[in-house]
Length: 360
Image (cartoon, rainbow, N blue to C red; front, side):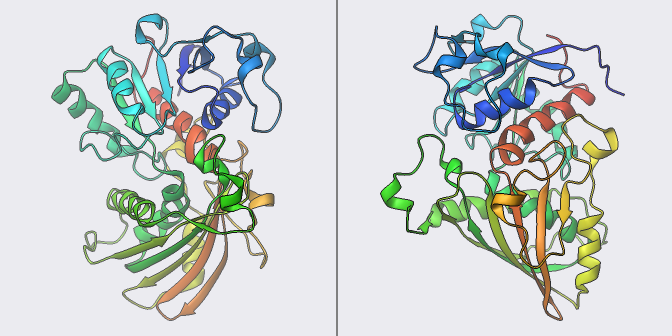
């Protein structure tokens, strides 16, 4: 069991960004991880409550509002035990490496290190065993600290429901169409004339990185059937941005190498649980996947905050048998919660439980 008397101090880099504020909101009442350092760019020296645009539910927590925003400098963080990094692509890589060299555990939502062979790409319910890569990472790079990454929110919206299907059935192909919210692009996001009255394709590069990440996550999923990962599994994605604020909606068609029963697939989704649920980690939802039988659900507006804690469950619905060897379903994920900050906190909790994070 977790030692609940442990009091770990956390720094949040990019604390005034959309993912940064979700870290603040979710950690303010955490049982043993406490926010002690807020880093930001362009607002250093000012009270957090004055400079942040609070683009989420609730208000800026009173105990956080007067905290001073400080520089992103590991030399100023002597009493910090965990660093959460939702920094943007490009800027994140060298900053995170410097923190790891200085002995900090870094939980990153950035893509900069997602495909380093010694860096875990972690969804705690799917591939918790990959945290052992930390040992190789420290040895290879001669670091006292380490970096663990979380996947792209879009990839998580498909990979979380695909994982139990992949674990229990012989998949042949997966075709994904995404309809993604504006907050996935950060603040201030997409120019209004690009997205209002429009569906904005995100392009081949985004499609390809989505598939690349899902492929890695499925390869790292433990299987309940004897065959090894089918190298001929075909995956494709077409991604789009629309004018919703939070929540990614994904339409998924899956075909199989043999006849499949949609009710068996439903059961695998409905009963799915992982290491966070077995360990009863504080941010782990009781049900990582909530299956709805309502014909008109899930909907982004109504279902993005599903789960307990809110926003930590992926909602799956419209599950249907297309043919003897094909099914269709849709999923909704809260992209800045489960797909980013909440996933990062859950990863940190797993690392605490497994002995990789403690007081520095």
